[in-house]
Image (cartoon, rainbow, N blue to C red):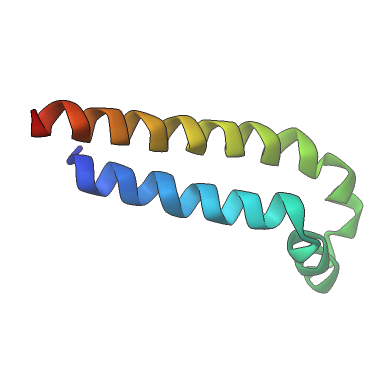
Length: 69
């Protein structure tokens, strides 16, 4: 995978996961769709996803720096 696309996926994933973690966006969406019973399990998915996307972003930045030298 190209470094640029890897960085894009990492940044977009980090922003979306952070937005869903720190604001009630996902809770409201689940309520609208009718899946409000699943809101208790959101943290089990979002926090590892946020960590994964942050690590992916750091890896892409490290790889970008390594390739530019």
